[in-house]
Length: 293
Image 1 (cartoon, rainbow, N blue to C red):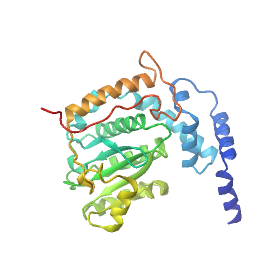
Image 2: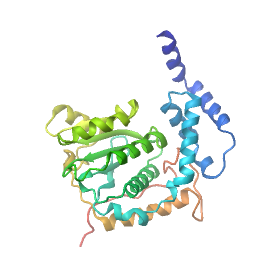
Image 3: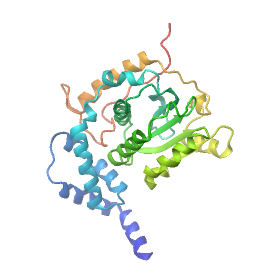
Image 4: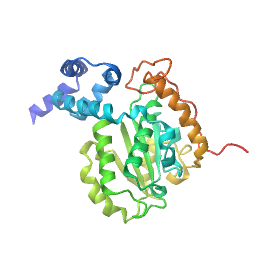
């Protein structure tokens, strides 16, 4: 027990953490191109945290991510390629942030409109990358709000797709999630969850909150993470949630330009100081309300 406490205390020492970041840099060896741009100190820290500051395990995890990114190329996905998946508004970036200024993704699985697992995943990966791009300086995590209105087993994604999404999130976007709110899931969801939860690692599991209307504990969870004035009524707040696909597509097209510039596809390149948090690319205000007629 004393040795475990010593190890944890050592990992909390900033100088020891910096030493481990240098150690994993040396272990990775020379990097170039997008791999070099991706592997900022903030990025290396996230992988180390995900593997409890074990350099060997963090290095293996990061190398697997670099291999995945080199083949999947998430930074090259453009909105027009996945826009058909977003027509119903099943996943979108919110027009508000949580209390700490983090990007919020809103998910409405009851609006599932696709039978293609690959397209489903590609659409979600695009929006994860977009959420990261739009994080404010000094913030590395995002929040997910999942509204189960209209959800049924008929609209549910297959277990394998859920497992693949969890794998990508946990292994290729470690420490990017602050909280996942499962809002008012129906009782029938419990059967699906009993299977899926075994794919969720302990750190991610702690971030998943089941929240229900008219429940005092649930209300406190929501108030601790979100301003009620900004929160849509679908999540117990006072704001309205309206998804306009044409407007959202216009905003995503603008963000595609930012993405191209950030990764050096455009005429100018942007230097990352906080992973690819978008610190150098200020997000424009986002509104999901229909344009005024």
